[in-house]
Amino acid sequence: MSDIAEFDWKAFMGSLTYDRVIVEIDDRTLAHLQLVIVQKLRRGESFLLSWRDSAEVGSGRSSIWLNPAIPLYFKFVGGRAATLNRQWIEDLSRSANSAQGLVIVSEDDSMPAAPLSPRPRTTVNARASTRGTTVPLPV
Image (cartoon, rainbow, N blue to C red; front, side, top):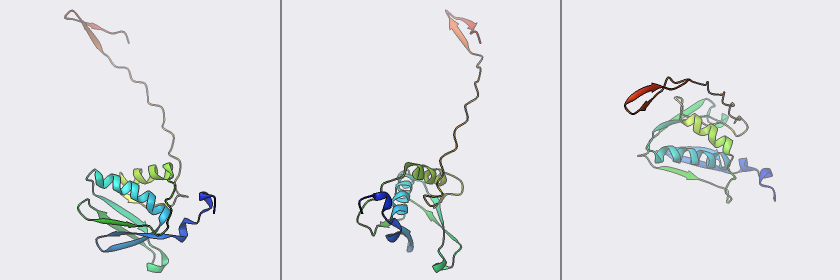
């Protein structure tokens, strides 16, 4: 295939192994998770990683507590590296920094961030000092 966008990443199921827990994740998702997880662990941060289980393992949800002291192994099955989606990485990072922890969402569920509302203009009652005399600044 010549077009990476048409490449079937779901056909390549890599895995994340953490303290005897093995989670199968498609290579494309795994590449994005690897970036977000490694960023957190490099900073010495522990956090929760959660996902929806497939029907083969009984559906439901699962979570693991990731700690920098416990080895983590990423196994990619495909031979090519995924092109990364900046928006998806930002969404996963935002999730990882939340109280609920990193929740694995599909690339399709990754939404553009809400636009920031303009910051309200604040007025500060500042004073400037001239030769030891305090002079109020015009507001």
